[in-house]
Amino acid sequence: MACPYFMPMEQLHGGTWPHPARLPLGGGWSGHCTAPGHEGMVPAPEVLQESCNLGYSRNCACLPETRAWDAVRFAVMAPRDGAGKSVGDTSPGRVVRLSYICERDHRPAANGQLEFDVNGSRWPQPHSDARIQKMAECFLESYLKKSPLSI
Image (cartoon, rainbow, N blue to C red; front, side, top):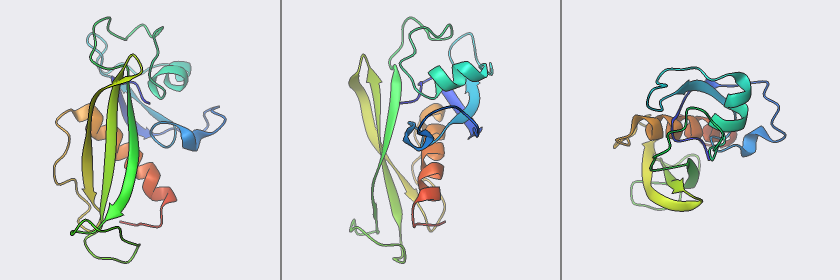
């Protein structure tokens, strides 16, 4: 579950996470903060590792007291074809469906699905929140590196 105010920009290599592939975005990411009053601030490496990439960081100095979410979680649903059937790597019309959950106090506060058209290499309906959309893109990038699907 990444911090909802984290705007990931590029994959972070060399972190000290014991299992980086298990991180909320499928790996560690560097980026900047979007919290009110801290927009564009690049967190220190230890903050990126302990807060931004993990969410639920109550001791982060940038985290607003009043907020809708504490963390964002993603999961990949089975790749689908245009008719909604599960497909393998060679089927036309491949779509990867992501599920996201925005949590507050360890409970779902908002959720939804996003779809990525693998063949067209596009998001037909991007998320209206640029942070959630960017996190989804990073999560999908990590997923596609491990998945038999290719763009």
